[in-house]
Amino acid sequence: MLSYSILKRLSRETKQFVRYKNPPDHWSVLRKKVHPKDKALTHMDDFYKQVFDDKWLKIRKAMLGKQKYVAVINNYGDDRETMQELELTGALNMRTLFNLEKGYLKEERLKNMNNKTMEDIFRLDEELDRKIESKIEDDSKESTATEKLTAKDFSLASSLEKAKYDTRRLIDLKDPLSTETLHEFLPATEIKGKEDFIPESTHYKLYDQQTNFAVKMEKEYDIPFPDHLNIYCYERDNKSDFEGPKRGQTDVYNYYLMDGGSILPVLALDLKPGNKFLDMCSAPGGKSLLALQTFFPDLVVSNDSSLSRLNRVESVFRQFLYDFEEKWVKTGKIRLSQRDGRFISEEGFDRILVG
Image 1 (cartoon, helix red, strand yellow):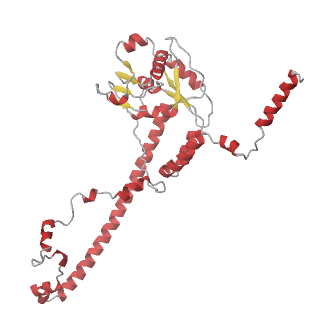
Image 2 (image 1 turned 120 degrees about the horizontal axis):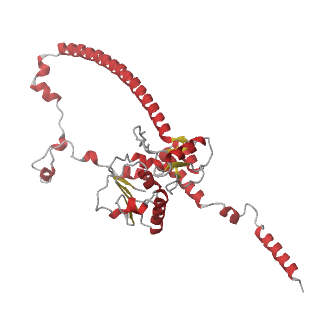
Image 3 (image 1 turned 90 degrees about the vertical axis):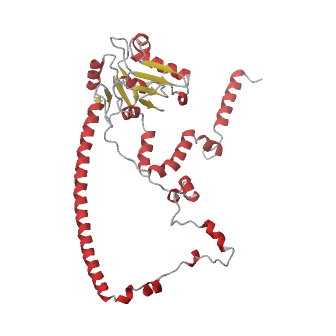
């Protein structure tokens, strides 16, 4: 009989043989290499490349690149000390960078507007000169043609000889079938509303994957950055990562780490003092916390249909807002809501963030 050690060795060798028996080009091996991410990228390449054209390569690269985090300073913690510590590590305040870039874009825009104004003036001058020359030529030709006309050319007989009749609109009273067209006669040159009619063939062209249609992308130059909002980041080529947040004297964390792109929706809302703010899908709570750091909203309603995700939002608030129950919940500054966002309508909100 075979010993246990020999059987164990044979079993191990057999497993290794079965595991590597298929060659690299075998269908079972190739099939395993296609992951859901690959399928998603294939679909997005087919669709979004037609939408964004040349810009899609940069968007795709950003999506596949390493996630870039920013540190949102908690104004309810040790904010001054935290900002000094981050600046010593090489982090930059995004508000400073934002204002510098905004000023640069404003100068460039004014420069381009001035250049465009001068070009428009020159173009209008040239068009005016051409119209004046054309008017002079037309007047000279008209005067010459008028001199050649005789009185017979202006007579009624001459006009009738040159007139053309549309026989399709003539109705023969002797023909009983032609009188029926009187009821269908519409004395109009064009049907009202026809200019808004879109043929079905044109409508479905928008769904054709081979159709290239341009997407107009307008740059926004007037996005405000609140004075009390301090967000730190590293430069583009700096691959440094932020350390984990620490608790300060008020027993709350000193900063909140979130994706850099997630701050843009809150900035685009342009929050004002006294606003009522609804975060319809608030989990994990970063955007609601970011809105609170501006000191603008009088009311923040953080809603999510999932109880587990809503608990995550509450946990974030408790970690970054001191005396959460007494100073925030009982005073009505923060409300947690577990509802379907489509049915939140009993109270008017000044700003609503969806997604």
